[in-house]
Amino acid sequence: MKTLLETIVSPLIDHPEELVIDVNEEPDKVVYHVTVHQDDVGKVIGKNGRIAKSIRTVVYAANRDNNKKVYVDIM
Image (cartoon, one colour):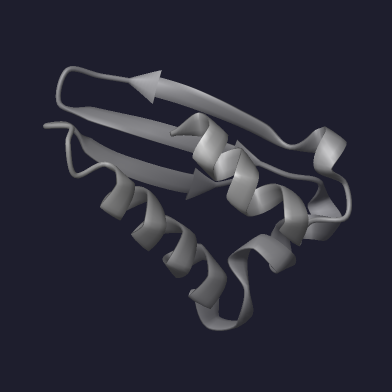
């Protein structure tokens, strides 16, 4: 799932070398914290949060096999 997030987010940003994805796994959920350069935050979130919502939708759909809930936080 981490590589999926990297594949989606990297082309959107100007500073892909500063992309950091931290994984926090708990018994009932997995939280992915996506951290990007300050100038790239708006590009990842998008107008009215549309891009962020689309990223979350793709990740949720890819997680259909797992019993844990998945959350994506953009920092």
